[in-house]
Length: 107
Image (cartoon, rainbow, N blue to C red):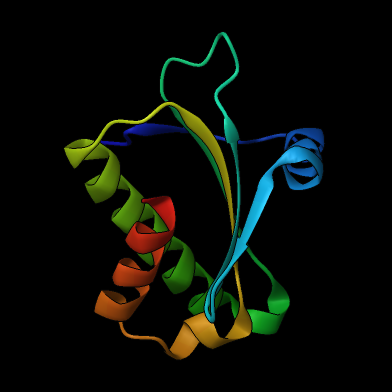
């Protein structure tokens, strides 16, 4: 079960990218911002572009990131806005390393 709400609209992604605090790592770029007044849970957007690989690879990376977030927010519920952009290198990164990198970035 999802422990966060997904960003859906293009303008929400753009706003978070413009106003959020940027953190870069070898496999991911994160933009974080405080929760909006009406947010009951974390609001998350995951972007995996074509440079990461074919559709099968992009979907695998997206599912891995979603699973890591579910696990993280189950243990430590947080109210925040988060945009995760996968870099091409994320496709070949083992799950454990990707998890460690994302959890470290989330604090």
